[in-house]
Image (cartoon, rainbow, N blue to C red):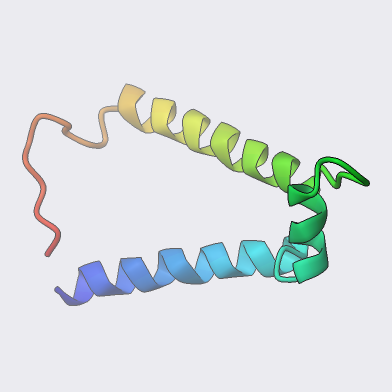
Length: 77
């Protein structure tokens, strides 16, 4: 239970750090991304693309090295 909570906290902290470093905590930057009719700011798109690429590479690497057993049921605690 404590280990699961620790890794959940660590994941959230890493996510928050990534958002703050990239400047996505500024409302103007997010509104600039959502406003596609005027001056569109594609920086959030590149941030999401980088996250998806990183996830894809790491998922394939972990799956290839058989570090996780997908067939075994996992428990959240």
